[in-house]
Image (cartoon, rainbow, N blue to C red; front, side):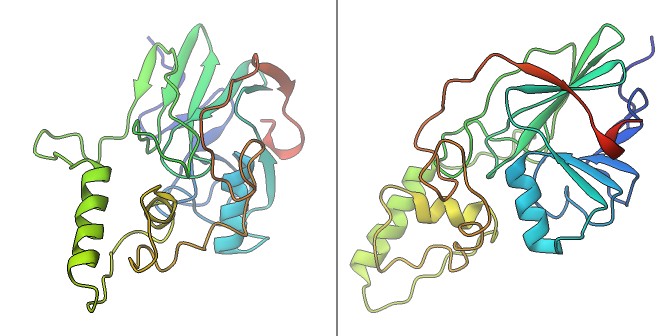
Length: 232
């Protein structure tokens, strides 16, 4: 059986790669972290938020052309349908579903199922072939609950107000998550770089900073044809 997707995340039907590590003619990008989003591609397909993050990090001309695809919309490229679905990882992060040749393949990219006000809520997607990220897939990884860790931090701040508290975390994603936690209080220096995304992107259903207080109702999937350089 021939799969619509190869092991290096190349999609022959549309002559495009998903999160390629080197510059390609066409690339579908799941999210803005540097191990997934690289500069130098000829054409990039991604969510509007991911495109905004890429342009801010790498410059307006970091790709030859950008095509934005919103959640709930399907893009026809030749005989295939491409759609993006919320991954819950960071602002604009998406799972990529490719439909064609009687198959539905889903590439999750990095995803998170826990609620997070700084990202669209993770959305389960039906598929026939699932390619999942597994950075922390081994049973040895048992992460504590975020609310418990935030409580520990705030207790330490209360017990030791004379001490400076610094939290080491990724500038994009984790820093915003710490700043957006409902229990965040002045005096806890959570994510000194948390302002990175605020001026970058807006959400269609949030508070203007890409922060979404709840999962919105998704419209029925709409389909449009690919334009310009993203047509094989």
